[in-house]
Length: 552
Image 1 (cartoon, rainbow, N blue to C red):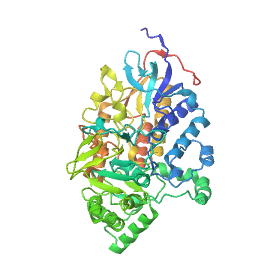
Image 2 (image 1 turned 90 degrees about the vertical axis):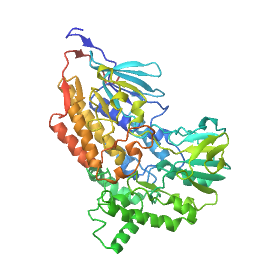
Image 3 (image 1 turned 90 degrees about the horizontal axis):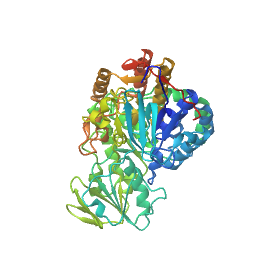
Image 4 (image 1 turned 30 degrees about the vertical axis):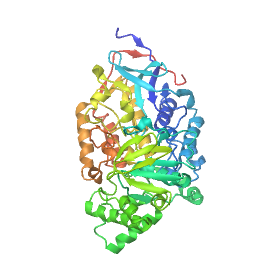
């Protein structure tokens, strides 16, 4: 191809996914940068995580007034949440409202899964293929596939022989599930299990919970939203509230405690924990003591307080012993909040099975068999989590330079620079990829930081006629080392959690999210941009590109 030849691309950018990330990136690139953008979404509606996760009790654990986009002041003022924590149907309504209000649907192709994406080195662009027969080209490939969107259904012997119905919480039937009069099993007591179990127990004839790991959980104190608080304290001060969230440790507009749990009296420590328990939500881990996430002795005080509360709630001694978390620190797994989770085990129709001591041997046509007992069920619910951070990427055949697949690149665990790019995969940007704060923060804040930073980078490239941007392998190596170094002193390293990939057999044990805090991460990203996008290899090609109309 001659140096003066013109490459006609189908789009300036292809975005994968139409959840918070995909919708926000589409609006930013199309409406602010004037780019042509095509979004591909597997579901038959927008919403991403909140399109698929419709299980009973599904809701977010960020307070509703900060679980939102910040790009439109009018949207912030006009939208009204009904609850302290946004529930799944309302989040989905919100995202559909955003799609309609900003005319995003015309650039979104639903019911379409991206099956492959290949970087064509001789032309410096991406070729993307879908399961609907599309084969398109774009200069930039941007993934908004979600951190916890690929469900993990364990390979239990006999699973396919079950004659009843089974479901995974991450791919719930849109018409719902009727549990009335049914014998139900729930396998798993992570976040989705803790939310679903109390609701299912109220409906089912009987509920048997199969638990591998007892959980620490704090009451959410979920209720209708305080309308006066929203109208008088939040909406007039949204700019300040969201700015505080952007630079905080976890994307919440809260003041983190600077006190040590070990430097106050036992009485003061008890009062602090009691107040946080009564208030509910994330205040317990964010607002009590600074060292419960980094000092095991301080953490022990919080863990024992939570165990004391479980002892107060659960009546049956045998069930209580199974529910007490003793083998990992508080906060080493995802911090959970709940509504009547522990109280549910006082119901006569609920039984708890500890599968560490009595493992599941197989699923039978009529139920589940453990080492000691056989159970009969009409419905099995897998609340077994996700192939987090990497699962959605590795379901696609993504190939960078020299045909290297992302799966090959990540054989020993995910390697990225900033959780945004991968060396060897030019012009591919990840929204909240492995190595970013993502799942350790309020997700919309993390997502918008990436949207803004990536789009600013793309604008920088376009203004200077730079064809490709690619993470330098040394910068990538340094970032991976930094992510692991930051995680070392935290409680996260003291449990087998999905943060480390421990819930997926054969998955490399690598700590995947950035634990340094979203504010610190934001500063690092700003510094890198201010230094001319340090750590990226920028290349100006010799080929001209036909410009794409933003309305296409």
